[in-house]
Amino acid sequence: MTERRLATDEEARALASSLRLRILRICLGEGHTNKEIADILDRDPASILHHTRTLVRTGFLEPQPERRGARGAREIPYLATKKSWQLSTPGSDRTMLDTFLEEVALVAPDDRDTTRLGLRLSPADMEDFRAQLRSLLDDFANRPDDASAAAWSLFVALHPDPNRP
Image (cartoon, rainbow, N blue to C red):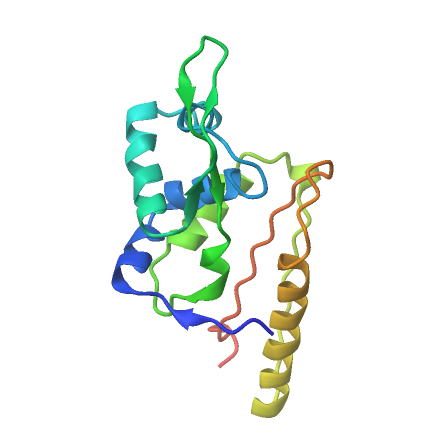
């Protein structure tokens, strides 16, 4: 199981933006330039540059070798470092949930696979469940990226059930 460390204040602030989380996902496995990121997100490149620089400064994005664009302009693609997977951000705000809701809204309903599960487990069984789930996620997160395969996203939220006290 991958050991996680607590995010620093600067790292937590960098991850406290649904736009930045989406930029990290865009740059996962394949480098993209600031303009490409802006085009994908339908945003202004200047505003994306601010977010990209924040992610580079905090180690979440890594600049790749410079290349020349179609018109000869200098372009720097950025690649996600997967650092966010190594961090714990307990007590974080709704950023991850908001990011999930933004992304899933862009997906056709027939392409979504969703489910909910209610559990009543002893503390020991709950710890076992958490460990097995984390191990499964780590296993797939640590596999090499297959650029020829379809990209998928997974959102998991585990919380006490307020409907069944």
